[in-house]
Every structure is written in C-alpha cells, then in structure tokens.
Image (cartoon, rainbow, N blue to C red; front, side, top):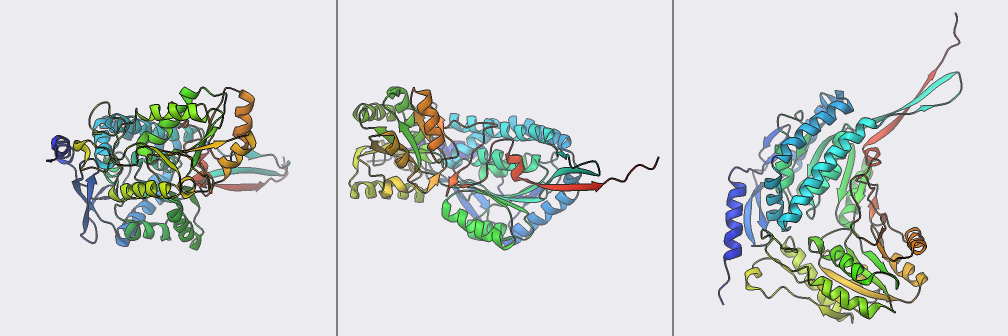
Length: 503
C-alpha cells in the first residue's frame, strides 16, 4: 500500500518556510560562528522523518571560544551592569522574541514533534520566565547582620561568572527560560549546549539577542555530548554548571564538576506517582492522570508514570482512565486539534517499544496501546499509541525505570501506609500527585511523599515562581522560583570594624 504523502508534504513545506533564512551555526560573542571542525549534522523532523536543516557540530575548540567570550563579558560590560539595567535589556530582548513567537513555536514543533498549539504555549511560558527572573532580581539584596556596636556586617550576593548550561530535548525553550533567564538576571554570562536532538529554537533565541545583549553574554555551542557537552562540563573557565537530563549523564556532569569543585544544579529523571484515594473524584482524577502522562508524548521528567489507586475503586478508575486516554490521540503536530505528537527521535521510539515488551514479559497486563498507530499517514514518523498497563508490580522494571514515553502503569494499594510506601519506593523523587477530597489526607500525603513537588487534584502544577526540583536521584537545586537566583549567586560576608568616634 502506498504511503499517504499529505503529512510529509505539509512538513516539507513548513520546513522550507521555516529555514528559508535560518542558519544554525554556533552563536559566540554576539555573532554567528562556524564550527572549528567544519563539521555539521542534520536535525530531523520526527513526525515526517525528514531533515530540517544542518547544524554546526561543536568541539572543545568551540567551547573554548565561547567560554573566553563569556568570561570577557562577565569581567567587562555585563559585569558592570546593575540588576535594573540587566532587566531592561532582557525585557527588550523578550519584546523582540514576542514578535517571533509564531516562528519559534513552529521551529519547536518541527524539531521535537510538539503539537503546534502546545509549542506556542511553551514558547510564551519561556519568555515569561525570562521576565520573571529579571523582575525578581531587581528586588534581591544583601542583608545587614546585627553584630554589636563595634562592627558593621553585611552581605553581598554576587554572580559566579560563567554559567555552563546543558539543555534537554524535551522542552528546549522552556528550560532555556528556566536556566538562561535565571543565570543572566543574576548577573552571570552563559554558554549553553542544546541537545543535538533539539538545536533550533535555542540557537534562534540567541540570534534574536543580537544588538540587545552585549557580545559574549549569551553563547550557544551546538553539538553532541562527547564532543561539546563534556568539554563544557570539564572546562576550568566555567564557574557554575546546570544540567537537565538523565541520571547517568547527570552523574557524569557531577563527576566532571568535582575536579574544579564547580557548583552544580541538576534536574534529572523521575518515576512520579499519582495516588488516587477512594474518596477522589475518579473521573477528574482519570483525566488529570492521563494528561500527566500523555502530554508531550510522555517525554517529561515529571510525567505521571505510575498511578497508585486504592483497590476498592481500581476497576472503576481503570475504565475511566482508559476513556480519558482516548483523548490523547497521535496525529500531525502541525494540524489544529492534535493532542499527541511523535516521540522525538528514533532511539526514543525503540526504547519505548522495548519497555512495552519488557512489561509484558514481566507479567503486566497490556490494557491499551503498545504499538504505533495504524493510520497510514503516520507511519513514517515516530508515533506511538497511548499505552496502559494493569497489574503492574511496583518492583518491576516497568515501574522502577524511567521510560520517557506514553506508557502508564496501574498499581493498586490497600491502605494509606501502603500507598505512601509504594509512592516512595523508587530511586527518584521529582514530582507526585494526590487525588482526594479530604483536606487532612491531602496534607498528610503531601508531607509523607518524598518528592520536590506534590500536586493535589491536579498534575503539572508548577509555574512561574513555584520552586521545582527533585529529591533523591532526581536532582539537586530548585528552578522556576525566586530561590533559583541563589543557584547562580554566591554570598560574600563583609565585616567592617568601627572605631570609637573621636569628636
């Protein structure tokens, strides 16, 4: 049977339009920079499996150039700015970016497969984070410490200098808002390494800063982890590191940082529970949990990937959840109304498919999905059906390991104590949810669950100003909030001895 080429033709036309004037070199010292190696790689549209454009492939030489430019800016013009001056420049940059929201959203959709409407919301959210940090930074200040009459003691919050940031592929521009926005607002300069799977919007974001941010303030080096990421984490000129991604790579970043005792912020994996107590509004909980796992095709560190449901309501909830999962239907991300795009790249597709096989081998019951969609129009892309497993053992690989795809695990419990034990019985602690109409139960569960976020009767309950980060192997530090500025500053204590007046 011949392939329906409508989707491919639509994407090829969108790619031609999006890349007509787009060059994805590095962005170093306020200008396009070709790779020192002369090598480039292709970034691929996951919905159509066709190339978007070629991207500069970075090496240690490019990282050296970027760090040198960032260091000069930190010691020079940017280092001399006040928080108010930085806020004005960031605001001017965001004004330009808002004129390009449609362009950025389309690039994000093409590059990683997000439905276009979701991509637009995320772009606007990312710009909001830049402006939030710039605003909050103006209110940050040191403290005067009462230390008696013979001393004047106060503190200063000073930027580290050059922040090296390794950005993920699942939410490229959103995480740039979280990380780049905080680092710049606090007075640092940045060298960012986007994922090789998602270079488009980060590079374009940097290009839009031209003639607004001083040269060297925001630098982008594209490329692969071994070639560009590792040299960034190991660079002696980098004063602060931030990484979002998998636990194994986060461990490598932390080890590299140890050599120079470079402070790190890590936002790593998750296997987040959603605990459904028997008094919950089951229909609302099912819809919430479905969105928690199937939004972004399950490619979220905080995805609701384990549902713990009380045995008394398990059958009813399961039926409701299967109905809710039907809303999340794979489709062309460029078409209005699409709720779930493809997985972002081929290896991720294979990983998800492997875990579906593992789940069945472990004895879990496949209740829905477990395969690519049957629609002929989607067969070229890396699409996968919303998948649901019942009868899952919490000790199984399916329940313990991060899949990063649209795969849900249903696990039952008998008592409150068992629910909390199951919720905490994973190496991660990034996010969690609780469904109940009992306020006391909600607060007790929130206190007992070991996770950086607990969302009651909702999921993905973060936002501007709300701290986000993990317990256990899910990471170190907090992003998205006022305290994030503390991740990018260090405290200096100053003690001035006061003489007795001689008048």
